[in-house]
Length: 184
Image 1: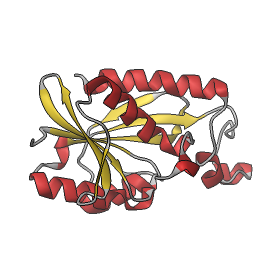
Image 2 (image 1 turned 90 degrees about the vertical axis):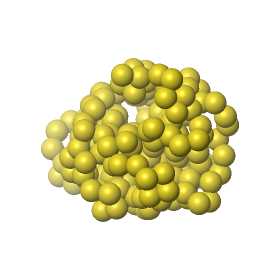
Image 3 (image 1 turned 120 degrees about the horizontal axis):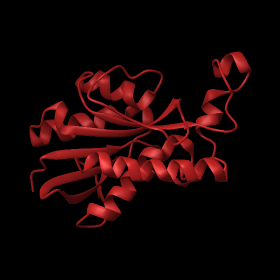
């Protein structure tokens, strides 16, 4: 099956990262798989990812969770685009966003990677013109304003931590929003 679109959830592989803020892309793609998937997740060494075939709005799609660490996500994306001879605009990326309030979503057709290492890796491989849904993770335990560095909070530790129960509920609500955005 040649997919008309590829939907990629960003995260870090391994049990240590399950449920962390930085893995909301993986959690979102799992929800999409529950609704639209036509198979189970399968390891795909050729793409350096786990993949699942899906059907969204009567259109074949490939759901993807890169098996690389976040900062190498672009390698997986490039392999898939090249193999299926797709354009970057045929790829939709789901990623966490530290600059958005917890549970907020933003759909953008293109743009810079900001401080997100997974998006930076993808931009390095295919350029800035690909759609992405950003899911806000800046929750209760984040500094109220300003940068993490100014507040003396380690950004890496924050994104790799698990959200509070209240924040988890808001993030779960964002997954429903992401489902509605990909169905358009």
